[in-house]
Image (cartoon, rainbow, N blue to C red; front, side, top):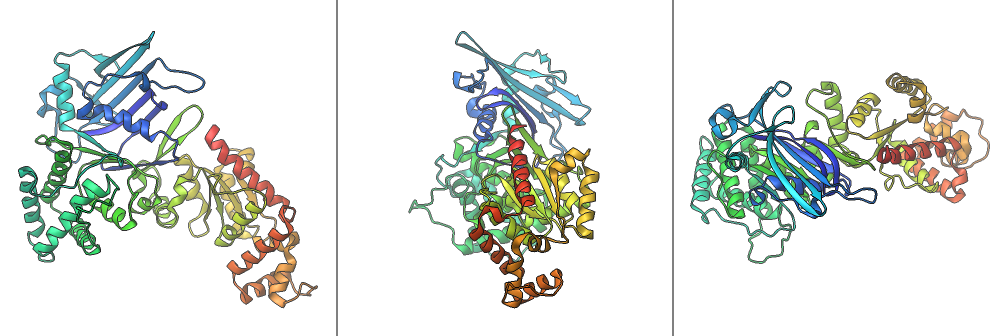
Length: 538
């Protein structure tokens, strides 16, 4: 079965959170304080080690304003759509505690843990519940729960936990799956030699039991994979990408799952489909991260990852990313569901954000500008005004090649605030009209939009006190020139370049100080910063 969702109320650092998980991979990103440790502690309740978990005093939510006296953890499982033969009818222990969800169109098992604290005494309750959140009265509850957790065992990898890498001959079951996997990968394929196969699978074993878990790579007795080993593992990934072989993928899942569970000290139950949860995934060399993500994608089990790195983003689809934001009153999980955005918007966001500037997904607000010139200029001009846009959680994103509306739609879907600045030419007026049509009223429009009163930012700055910069570069003198403004700017660009011109403007502004920054830009910076801070408090 798959873990479809978790609902948390009053547990550790989470007052209230509801989160859906994907059937393949869910990557949770957010600021350091969003509550990843509390979420992992909640998920740990459904691990084998914490069977029938008794809640403790430190499990109850507490902050300066209130201290909760009750908590609820609700775990919803659904039948795995990727496993055609899976049915709750196969598991009689679970059939009586399941229900059919018309919304999900699947059979569902919902396990709930509640606890209350009365005069310091804590009582914990474990139940299965139905679609009306009513308790399902049943006998043999521990046996039924054990069966649920056996067929969908969850394992949490934490980077501060110490594991030793294992070799294929340390356990007979692991060895058997290794031999079967080697046979499947070699079948009808002559691109991998036996030596390369051993290299690649050894690197894969270390990847799962050491690099992605321990991150302490100074043990001398460990044979570190070489660059050649990682390259061979990537060849195995290439082979798996091309294979339409369910048997090979299933054997691969059994092999690596057996490695993982053997490391944990117990064997993987027959016919189980594990759920892998990795904390701080991607805090390794980019090559290891890339190869590791490809390997995880080729292991057909459910994966839940938390990460603080943007290196993973280009390897993911839009629905794989769950962005978590914390406000004063709640934690919100934002995710684009499959087919929620149009195919065109999906492709544009994938290329423009995921592939070109994935770090923008960690920002609280997107400052959307037409071109790269604005990005070069505005960051430094804002700094001269005393605003560090990066520190404020603001990402400058140019939109001319993508269009402004796809970025606005995606930002809103992911809980990211946005602000648009456009030129005053025909294209800029079109962008402004698009934003106006998207906003529900004029107040919202003016809260999110600045349109320059000039054809572009160079003309705007020329007219607002920076004419001498452009004249000096174009003609070597800041004296009056009887030439139209746009020709002066064009000549200056031809004699240097847009980046050099932007640097010259910034140098000039830095000498003159904040008073040199046009009032319109200063107001715009303040509005963008207000939006960024507002996304944290509203």
